[in-house]
Amino acid sequence: MTAPLVISSTGRLQLGQLIAKGGEGAVYELANNASSVAKIYHTPPSDERRIKLEAMVSMATPRLLSITAWPSEVLKRPDGSICGFLMPSVKGHKDIHTLYGPRSRRQEFPDADWRFLIRAALNIAKAFAAIHEMGCVIGDVNHGGIRVSKDATVKLIDCDSFQILVNHRYFLCEVGVENFTPPELQGKPFKGVIRTPNHDNFGLAVMIFNLLMMGRHPFAGRYSGKEDMPVEKAISQFRYVYGGNKALTQMSPPPLTPPVLVASHEVANLWERSFSKNSTTGVRPSGLDSDTNQPRKKYRNLWQEHKPSLRQKPFQLPLVPD
Ligand SMILES: Nc1ncnc2c1ncn2[C@@H]1O[C@H](COP(=O)(O)OP(=O)(O)OP(=O)(O)O)[C@@H](O)[C@H]1O
Ligand SMILES: [Mg+2]
Image (cartoon, rainbow, N blue to C red):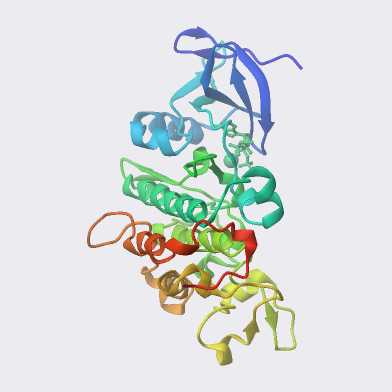
């Protein structure tokens, strides 16, 4: 396949190898620059998308570019129409889900121990908080949007789908994945919905749960009632499997699941709060402590709390809290 003709601010752009194709665009290496890649849309972007991309480029800061694949420059066709954008490369990073389960973790991150997982979790929480600080919302939180390096730093990709606010105008994110969608948005169309950091923080809690609990989903379990209880229905009915009120949830964990306390009382408490009914009104734990604006102390405490066992590989479970 011949690479499309693309113009950047410095003239004709030499595209290199195709890295991957998504639903909306194809991502290419650059022939002369290993630190950036180009995303070229399959179909010409709408005017709305063009204005959004130009606004995102003007919002780019060194911090955003270090934690995300934020658009750094728009790319054009020879006729001047926009066809895509440049962004930092995350080629050395791996999909977050390869860290969840023991088998893929052993293969992709053979040295990862508890410290590594906690560090990755903390970095994800910090990245979410940095996006929110800019007035943006991720919206479509999912496994495909977070990549992890071998030193547990993370990068968010697919940023052109984020919700952004420019000059009092929202550019919405009108897609989402059910497993990461909070109860208040379950079963409703995303079209026209203004997403909030509190919605993202539900997805954040699910993501950290997946990471520290060997890929288990907090709402997937055995339901004692008669009807089927798929994950999205359990989310919409607040049936957090590991929650304190079993009489209400009627859920129990799947077999061979570690207890939530392996992640410490404090983190278990953050999950309980993230998945409770009260959480729908704006109080889900975020990546930052609201009083200090520092990375959440509870995650740091977790690091301290588990010192003796941190060097264990997480696939050596069952691991009991100290
Ligand atoms: N900055 C990057 N560096 C390296 N590879 C990337 C980068 N961004 C995306 N990719 C690769 O390209 C794929 C598609 O990218 P992306 O998710 O942005 O496309 P998309 O068309 O918007 O997909 P979707 O329709 O799922 O949102 C990613 O899954 C990833 O493998
Ligand atoms: Mg996308």
